[in-house]
Image (tube, rainbow, N blue to C red; front, top):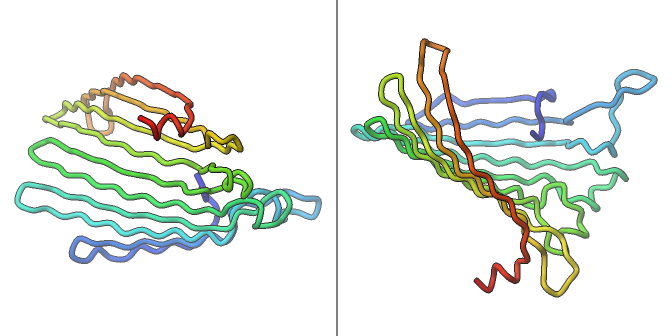
Length: 207
């Protein structure tokens, strides 16, 4: 959601001993249409000099499969007044992993969005861009598969009150099943329970 299909240079290394590296450079995430043709300004909310990097590992130990990954992204946000000082820069990192054995797969990941796109004033008052973590368990037997998962999203909102920043939280609990009718044709059904709340961080610290 940061660079989408913007022009970029991307490199993936060969896999060696289970490891692989990847990186990309996006000079600018967008252009604006002007009377003189396609032009790009430095105050339109785009992101420039975006550096993305990642490392992953896949391997198998006896009958246990393992996958691990780490990714990060940094960039300069062009805010509405053309100054980098009023909006916090792009800074995101992610770590994830999975283990599979005898048809079962257990996976988990964590994303931290730092203070990306948050105004400096709000960041100084406790706001951030949030974080997410998820864990899921699936089982596959022939054409049939079932799964269950849990996701938690948290974000601190700016506040100048003595109580501190308010926190928004969203949780998702889901269950799913699928059947592979033919290659490329899968019938699926999911059921999710979603809850969203906002509460004061002082209440969270006291619990």
